[in-house]
Length: 139
Image (cartoon, rainbow, N blue to C red; front, side):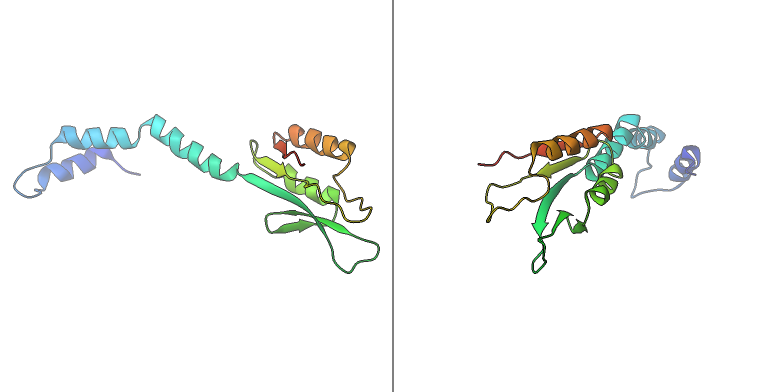
């Protein structure tokens, strides 16, 4: 543990150049570096990193019969909706899942998360865990 009074007494005994550091200067430095507002700012910065925006994609698997899809978030893939929900459940509150469904479909595809009910269910699920669901309008 840092003991300010020991730091101050050591600095008073030592010389830096031709002058001595004043007790007041050191105290001011210690107080400002340990100020609660600064600590809160550092905490909010770390939360900002954790509460990032996660891009959700639905990817068609090639060479599968019948056609299969996986959910992809970043570099992680999920074969089922339940495994995607497990991932979302572990995200820090305040995170965002951004989903851009696009508007191009090939030959009668019916991929997951393209019905309004599925999207609504996912949005409700995210809200339960304080994760924001952001759907990018296509078209």
